[in-house]
Length: 228
Ligand SMILES: NC(=O)c1ccc[n+]([C@@H]2O[C@H](COP(=O)([O-])OP(=O)(O)OC[C@H]3O[C@@H](n4cnc5c(N)ncnc54)[C@H](OP(=O)(O)O)[C@@H]3O)[C@@H](O)[C@H]2O)c1
Image (cartoon, rainbow, N blue to C red; front, side):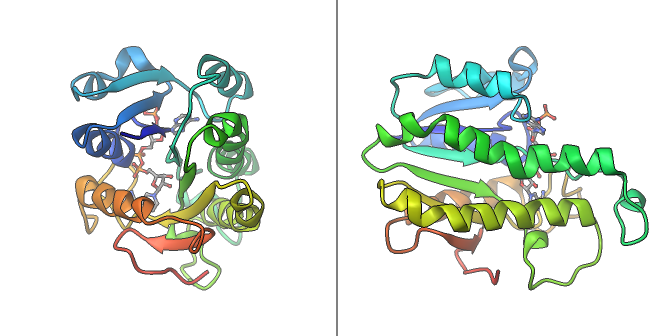
């Protein structure tokens, strides 16, 4: 049994990740901004603990770390994310800078803050792993000129996690970033290519094979390696 902490677990891909790990008997620390409203999480059953976490709020992250002090965490999944300002306000010609800053806070900096705050818990595991849900839109190699703030935020996340991987591997903690596919969620929209359950199953399989040899990888949900 592993202990798995998931951010943004109340809906979308995060909810399906919580369901997948709960189903296989793992202990799930399902984090969300408003636990009292997380009815889908409450209905999951299994070994699921719903915890309050606003990933962009330093005090909230610190409170979570304090609450979990002394408890090993085997897998941290940085899943919470936002698309950023309206599309017409994040282009080559026009930018909502406050919205871009918020997008960076949630998508780029929060995964780092959460990971660093929970390092004692990851160190206490026999095999600590951190998977950050990125996007193909954060790949420098992909020229898809839309959602510029979102793309830049995921590119920053990718760069940080790739840079950090060797240092953390020296402590036995392994990192990856995973593109979850184009997924039928509030963010992906109803016409997206795959269901949240398909995406979550692929993400779980990727995390299962994360080890010292492949730490620092950028994967797609289906197991393929993604171009940086
Ligand atoms: N769907 C896709 O096609 C797709 C493609 C590529 C990458 N992704 C990535 O996959 C991840 C999950 O996306 P999704 O499609 O499941 O999106 P979603 O349905 O919009 O869900 C986003 C989740 O993130 C949470 N969240 C946002 N800001 C937060 C904050 N400050 N603190 C804590 N939680 C916060 C939301 O919580 P609230 O309910 O409180 O807002 C919600 O649980 C994201 O990182 C996204 O960028 C998605």
